[in-house]
Image 1 (tube, rainbow, N blue to C red):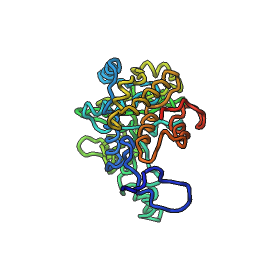
Image 2 (tube, helix red, strand yellow; image 1 turned 135 degrees about the horizontal axis):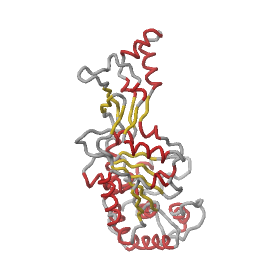
Image 3 (cartoon, rainbow, N blue to C red; image 1 turned 120 degrees about the vertical axis):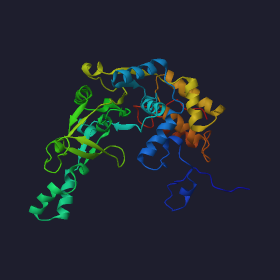
Image 4 (cartoon, one colour; image 1 turned 90 degrees about the horizontal axis):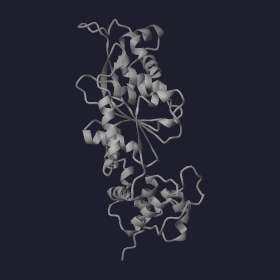
Length: 355
């Protein structure tokens, strides 16, 4: 007889140390961080998300139009409708490099997306090497290249390109969280396709002038791990416009001038068949219990009690965890926690999912 303890629960709140963490099962496929390196993790999660993503024809046409016209896409829709996944789907199907991801917050600025200059790190390095001021000044002029202290952001990396390069896919996620100035700031960069790095533009030319053509060439880090690219005369210019996917949850309106320079597309909530395909791709066969919960989820959508697809997947994943009995009243609060309607506080009752 197997007396092994079930996986759930691990934490009991009893205060006595134990080895329950050893029973922790493998993570959900969409939360697997075991790949090597940040790029590999992003690629792994992105590929998994695109496994069942099938945009409708109008979305496909909008993507193609944006690629041909070299215009950014502004994608709206409810959480879980696949807005971010669209960027990964484009990169995956076209065989492009890892998606450059720029998550937006209320504090995000254009400079954050373009580049960062580590002035403090540069100063600290020179102080360590040469404490006295005179020799420190000389180190600034003849020490490590200034490019070692500059890293392009996701937008800057996407723009830096040469003839013959394949375009990068740039995901500017949840743009509607930004402050009022960022859309217009982005518009200027998208229209011009270039920006200046003042720290490089001002750099002393005495050791940086290229003898062949008189240009100043700097190698700077990109948003890709440990990769460096060349910047000429302190100006980043695009020769191959990136495929830009900007997502919005419709939390705010954007300036009309910004909207008309984008191609706008709205992703609708998934159908029953698409939901079943998503569940099958993530968690395997859709049994009767899973189908009941999918029907419950769709019922909430029809009642305008919007839940994200992630919430449905969370319910189904934990529902298959040994030790959880969904027919038990003990887990009513857990079900409610997992399915709290967006915009409401935990503890506000939703329609209870089927046991």
